Amino acid sequence: MLSFREIDYNKDLDQIIKLINDNLDPDFTIKLFKWKHLENPFGKSYGLLAFDGTEIIGLRMFMFWKFWEPSEENLILALRPVDTVVDKNYRGQGIFKRLTLMGLEKFNGDHSFIFNTPNKNSLPGLLKMGWEKYNFINCFKIGLINPYYGFSSFVDVKPDEIKIDDKISFQKEILKTYTPLTYFKWRYQASCFRIAYFEKEQTYIVYSINKFHIIVFEITGYSQLNIRMLNSLGRKFKKALIYFYEDEQFEKVDFLLTLKRYKPNITLRNFEVFKDNQIKFSLADLDASF
Image (spheres, rainbow, N blue to C red):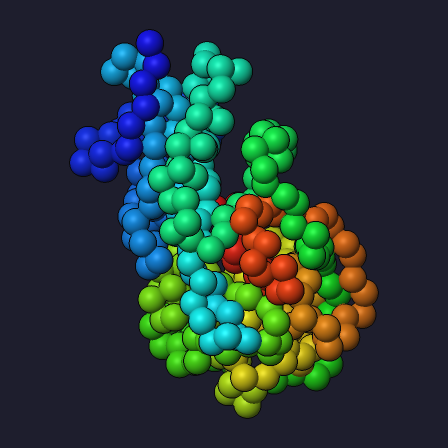
């Protein structure tokens, strides 16, 4: 007979990681789980488990998130369901739905809205349970720059060296992830991330580098992004391609050429109260690590 309860982080982690490794991601580690769910500056995640006897056969995690609402100068609390795993031998029995509804009931009224970025497997189930697709979705794109024409000097800094107003926003009607220094230190502690500081523009670009692209995860600062900043990164690393998620920061960037990739799935629940607002998602918000 199936049973359900909250996670006990002191004794359940080994079984949880085994469930994830066997049924979702063989490379998922306990270190990643702790970073994501126990060290999040917005709060320790709430988790629910499904059991068959003493064996964990289902998992549903709920991350806590905060958005900044510039028009009201207000912090908005949100819930972010992530990491759904059901043992392949128990699928089709309503376990995903049961775990999700239990979590929503637990936090009914405590958070302003719920959002997540489901994969193609979980999207249909969420839509049946009342989630709605977010309509203001942009594309992931690749932009071509000329790294040898026009540039602006920068230095790489560490997350704890960032000095910026965490509530800054260029558009008053747009919600954005709240990014205090504790967020930057948590989000970008992995060695793959770099942070470029452009002193003239007083702006930071969080990026990484792969074989083909410079990947821009987040931009924060007092100036609108311009092509000179991206040219500077390209010049240093001999890369002419920028991978990014399109938002208002890129409106004035004159790429030589852009190529659309795809749109992410973003779903919302209980967002009616903010119907006059949009959410500014960064590539960091939509990254596969969540």
